Length: 397
Image (tube, rainbow, N blue to C red; front, side, top):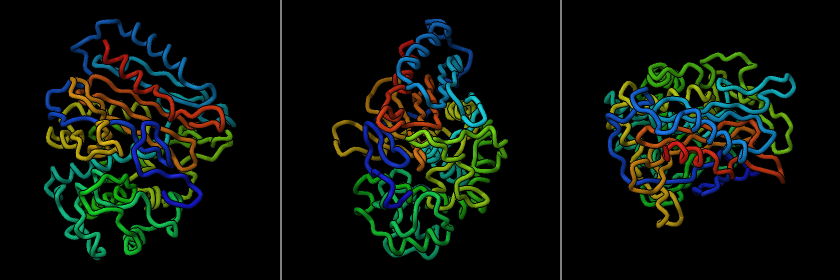
């Protein structure tokens, strides 16, 4: 989150920068996803899946740096067409990475927070146009008019983080202290007028989820999103993973920085500088299941899925490049059949990096996760256009 020793960026970049790398792309209004293909067996690629696998593998081996522990999964309409892991999840113990290695997916948490809000809207417990002052008691006067929609789309005017005095991602901060800190937080712009990427805004959405559901944030996501979608290894602490299944993070010098769950956390997950906007742990397999769920109506309605992938805000300093943001997803420009939604995330210690790229019509998915994302002076995986290149290969079929 915040803190003077950490480089941050509130703006979207083609090459993401900052603590939990933001995202790099945009799209035009996306139709409802009812009837979208759901990675089933009905249709096959014109090329064989084996040939597609080989083409993807050639790209991965050419572009992925040597050294990091990483997992790459790709899926087409026919299902998973590529799933390979490289390197070690724990060097000291010689544990190799695999498709079910648990990685910190960082800011990719936002898509789950956004989906949880829309689930509450489906239940009639909240509406995206509701004002925070009507949902949360005791807020400062300038925060009360902010809407749920503005938080979801990063147009509330809130800064990226709380003031430095409230620490960083791993500083103990309670929900009550988060809300109290708003009295010392100034808006960057008038609400609804400009895009400012805000982790703070998504932490406030986690508060809304708890208030309107009557459940802890992670429990609501587990009960209403993860379990129905078949995600049993995603969360903060509830999955109860064996320690060896969670990847150790390595900093830019290659030194171990521990597992995400070994950082200063509350008993039920990250403290409130991070909760709602980051800190979720998941696997490539679970993220594939989530992709399939987003292609059907078992978890979210067609209207809710449409809202996720509608470009609600221009998310670039250059308004002509088409970069946009939906709810928890970045969206690439274009009017073609295979519009791309994606997001990236990078942990504070810099080791874990996660990128999810999917076509909104459900025909392509790419998941890239690593526990060692940057080697100082040598390479940085966030600067490699690997995931998008794989998606292009799938969509060419």
